[in-house]
Length: 285
Length: 305
Image (tube, rainbow over all chains, first blue to last red; front, top):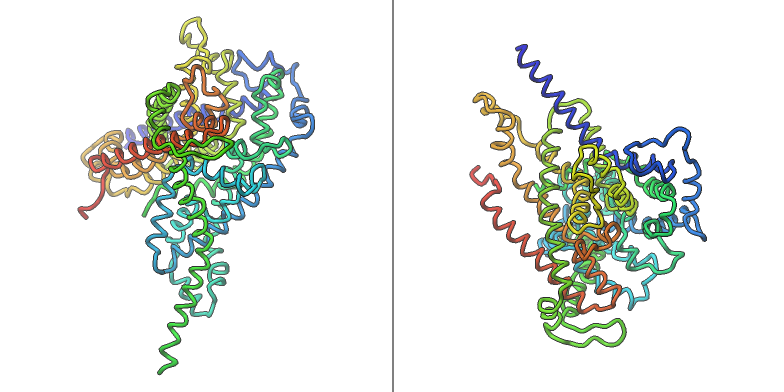
């Protein structure tokens, strides 16, 4: 008995040590970034220290980084990002919800085809659609508009999110819908008054993931947006890598930190939603 | 009698109308944003499609040119394959090991689970690419750590400027984002019923032994799922290579997605770029099929039950 409890104790210590080491490896780069935002150039490289030396703390890197271009500050570019992200998120959630609801709950002719089409497009690399869509948007005069970044989402084009919602709806008992029919609810009432409140967690998950992935998206804005005054946060961040900005590393780190701030805030606000949501995508049954 | 018979039919009709209405957005989306692009992209690949002027049908000339005359394509293909074939196993192995460590009754597991996911959600962000450029600078923290262990002698590794190490730098960034793959493994591990371990426990099999002879076989379907997922994404890597190494040095990280981007959106060769896209799609498709076919041999299915 004593042996086994001692072994368990050792086992536990080994596990925690490993977990903490992995945690440090994962989080250290981010802390180093934040710390370096308070440093002078000479204190950034050649050291592992996160914190700047006490007598050389630089406070105004953030103020300088805030005014990220001559014309505008970071807030302006953040607003640009929201101009496509908010419609993108709303359209994605709504259109994927409708589609997923019908596939998960209704029987109709061609359902098998619809479901297979969702799965096939889920497996298709996004790359496959890029050039024709670009040329299509060019025809439609959508280039250099924020709409080019969300127009596809009006039409439930994210098979991944459709699939995610279907998976979740399968766990909701059908008796719920049937009871609602008995009570004389119409179809829209069933969906929005009965189903939506129950599947709220997955809706939040989809909204968060859609928003955060959209925020990370760099290639989309790079291809579709040209005007300097339409640049999104990710496009303007890219300029930090150009030689001119690299004069003050502390400023670059401050800009990076500011750029990641909305993501980090959202992450902590909603972590339980996508940690569970992502975990569930692996289970097919 | 008549009224009774017509009523259910009426209800059914109304419902189908509802289904149709709800599916309209998806149907438009499927035709306009999926079928149309796929079909036209193949047609473009058979055309000379310049930025200005009309496209001209040229048959398989683009493909022939890519395979026989285009050195950059081959360099790009080698770079992509290096990244995918080393990066994918790295992500799978690391995320599996971490999931296995986390899959025990430990206090604070939820904390670690959440913390480990942070790099995954931030990883694609431009700011992280900036951070990576700095971390792997000649004088950056990575080289500082290595010099403590006197690794590589006196010569500091120039990570992003050396053809070999540039790919490794990007693979490390990919591996750093193992969180979402790990979460899928972890939830699979948590789904393995405790009872299957009981017999092994009585036989005195060690934990590690149990992991490889019981757990791994049971979760092979999830390994397959993760492998294909990571692989397909890795083949399309763009941000890190574009931002950190800019495809270089000497095209060592000039992944196919970068090459396609340059051909299409920098040079305006839409036909040529579409042909490149189809070659990449074919490679992804063939590899996925090979993995699926091989899965008969190593993926555990409980058909016997």
